[in-house]
Amino acid sequence: MIATTFKFADLGDEAKLRAIDWYREGVSNDWEPSFEFVGKCFELLGIDFDVSTDVRYSLGYCQGDGAVFSGTWYAKNVNLGELMEYAPRDDVIHNIGARLMAVVLKYPDGECGIHTRSTGPGLPYQYVNDAFTGRCDSDGQHVDMDDETYIALHSITGMLNGWVYNYVREDLEHQTSNESCIAGIESMDYDFDEDGKPV
Picture (cartoon, helix red, strand yellow):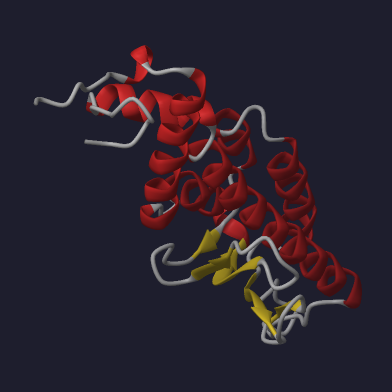
């Protein structure tokens, strides 16, 4: 006897939910975020880093969740206008860019390392390298970063840390949403039994 197979659209409601759950599990196991958007935004913020090695994240939906990164910031590479065009609806990244521009105006040749790290579950922290190249004084010596600028960069780094984490989390939520799972099932043209199990 030949078993009857069904396309997703022909399944009953409960069978459709089982099919979606099956597909979602596969997506969750294989999912890796695309960091192309993050990498471009960092570039326009003047931050140089390797997105494939310098970003780490955890999405267990628990206290230890978070994202960390490390890179080098160059004031001369900040391009706020292009950033606004590239990410026109991202108010958080616009705010970060505007805050960095305030530092650029003060130290147009500034550069320093900015990083986030984790000291344990639920304890991410950020820091700015003490070594900072800013404008030169009348003797040609580099001016140290003042306390106000250090605090500003420290705050900006923390904002970036949260922004990266939210981006990663939202990407996973989108990829595993019912709508995305249904689109994936239908594009792959899977066959199911009447209970929604793949055949």
